[in-house]
Length: 269
Image 1: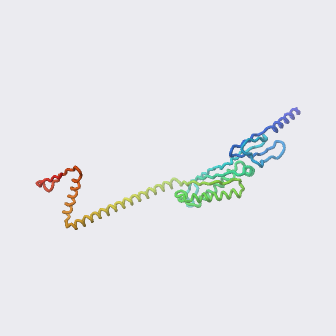
Image 2: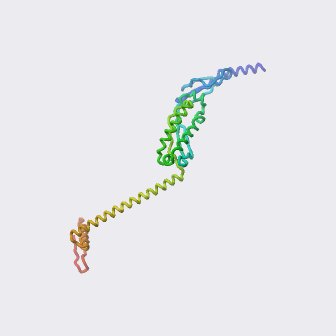
Image 3: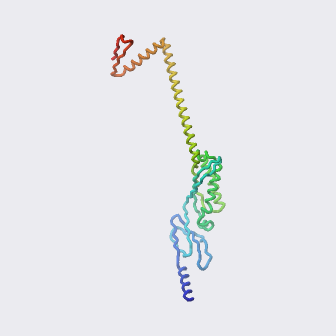
């Protein structure tokens, strides 16, 4: 029985030594290999990554694929307090690119973003937002570029100081969303301002019309005085002008009754 056990153990070890692991990174990936010897040696992370293609290694070797393309990570922030005490909702994006997959896996592990970057990114955004008021971040958005620049600068410094083999590609902080109560108040204020503007324009139009009517009346009265007409005569002359204008239309046929019923009827053709 002991001989059979030894033979079985030897066969198992021989099979283990002759087995292999297939490593095949896709385009834009590199594989980091971690040797875990079954019998001899200490193992560890190999110094060179496996490039895209096909490679065979020991069955006990562990492989970790690392994306070498720029990767985007989202951050949703709820109730970030502005400098004037208004809670704001933000959405921010950070884009990172791995520059050394071996150093990254060896020193920071496979879940490097969550363990080493995410919380720092969130803290930097919160700190930057607190320096600006609600109006400039959520309404006018004049502070968004300043927040982007500040967070980008501080995250670059953090990555360098902690020797993370990561390159910061870009940070984008979206427009802040104020609470519903603030938004509703802004809408109501805008509507009130629009009503005031409309009333002001209507008043200006009425004033302009009044001035035009006054100018016309003054001109008519100046004409009457120059012609030595009394008001009744001026009105009669204006009536005659109006009738003449009506009858001047092509194919118009006009009949005017002048004076009382016993006065003659004047036909104008």
